[in-house]
Image (cartoon, rainbow, N blue to C red):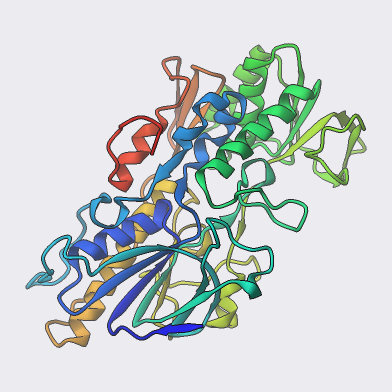
Length: 421
């Protein structure tokens, strides 16, 4: 193991929706003598909101993998409250101080992070055999998100579920194609979970495979309850027109052993109301779980019973030099990519303020994160979608097959040059 002791380092763990905002902001505004180091396990950011669509239309799958080559110096930086009355004196842009490395974080302390390096592009199953790096830092942002539901988890969990080539673009594309193969092979598909992911899977599968029996099962009587009732009504209406059977207000009490295996065996789900639903394929879309186990090495008391890291209004973890954002933090706002991005940018600006205090330039109070109004866009088949807010909902029929996936690339500083990157 080698130890990197470069001084005055800020680390950003995870460079997806939230991490890229933090990384780009720090790379642009850190003063001389400081550097930002991003650590990301994958070669490309996973635009998971389009995974359901590309699981039924896998030809578009490469567009869901966003190149990270320009994330440091080309990622989008949004304006925020002034850093200080005097402003930050940043070093010359693109001076080479800042870096994004590929690595799988294996352990943390209050002031250091250790990560494993891939071997020939892949991480070994036994990480103890991997070469590691340890980096000491002054400040850190935890942006490792959540563990996704299995149908969208191109990383995989457990020895049997690990995705071949995980962490690379070919592996993620193959994963999406494998989900498509399962969908094509199944005659009866049961989607469990009526959040955006489940709704998109159910509607896209039925829209592209009208001959299949598709059922959406949800534990609550209402879909997307954070939004106006009209959002629920629009979703239920469209699912009905597509021919998706909707079962609401029933919670699963018994699961099949291997819900994603299409092996000729019936997959039987039993609910708390005694209903029995049988399918060839069960897509479990019951939400992500916080990916926060590593934070126990920093402060186990900061991890709440629900798995989230407790943060204050400024997104800082109390009594530490850490900030936590996105699906890993119990911050204000919904779990969504745009909120994660805004939180990452806010956390970065607060670190810049702390650096100013540390270097005696000012004592500007830290910025408190304020979530924006709730808003969601959910596809309802290939071209139709609903936009829901707290005040109402509107339906549209002008959505493209790829759901404008490439628009996300600009967030990471990548121009649209095709799917080859």
